[in-house]
Image (cartoon, rainbow, N blue to C red; front, side, top):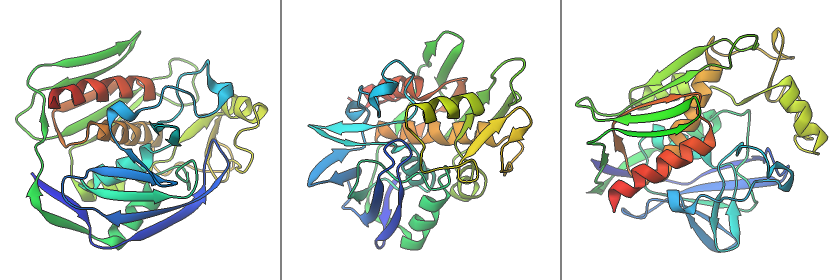
Length: 283
């Protein structure tokens, strides 16, 4: 498979969801074989499964399942990388440098659309090098209770599917979403799907002093009757966003994945476990 990078630079500015910090991100071309590397305060933080941080993005979230993906190199962290990594993987970029001047990638509207727009503005280009994909030859399953992710061998390239089910009484109905690896399909139907919180979850975060720079008009908050002061972009937008997260977290494998990947009720913690297991196939 051909390695791909960016033809030119692109810049995104915004606010971090959990830190509330302003941040400017510059996407830049990289030489073949470098992979995706974040650079903050002169420290290089590789986008790899072994760089996933175990400490929470905010101290008060220590007893919660991780709500995002944070990378760590030495004492330097880069928080909430999943949407940007998803956009890079969705558009087939294998090598890029991501420079940032803050602790967290901007959240934007909670989707990956701003990153897709920036990448396409910079233009994706082929490099004169190949990348060895990770090929799943035996089934791999990561499980936590009734949540699981399964990677199976396939003769049909890459496919991802996500099954969302919050159970009876949830304002979000059971739904699913899938992606078969096409860049245009990703840009049009996966990237625009936004992160979301149930009303109780958002209020709990507010009580911790988080999300203070955002309102339900900025990011989806779901009440009993659906989005508050907002509207769905897709009937199954929550499942599409969970799929977006899955693609971004599994990009930490560091190479394209040839497998049929199905996730059921998984979150970032289980995504991280599957990324580590798939990354182990490259050793």
